[in-house]
Length: 76
Image (cartoon, rainbow, N blue to C red; front, top):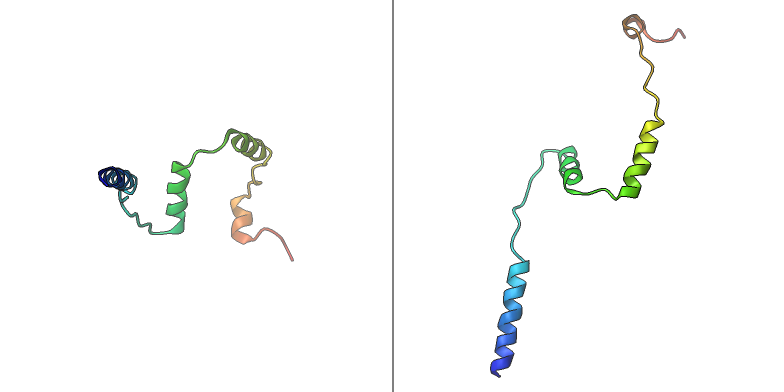
C-alpha cells in the first residue's frame, strides 16, 4: 500500500507542476490580441518565404494628387 501512495503523491506533484495558473490577459480590442499572438508565435520558414515573395509582388498604390483628392478622382 505504501508504494501506491508514493506513486499517487508523485503523480499529483507532477500534475501540480504542469498546471501552474497563468495570468489572464485582457485586450481592449481584437487587434491587440492578434498583435500579441503574432509576437508570441513563430512562423514556419516555408510560410515566411511564401509571404515574402507574395508581399514583394505587390505594387505600391498610385499616388493621387491633393487636387484630385479634394475635388474628386473622376468625372461621372
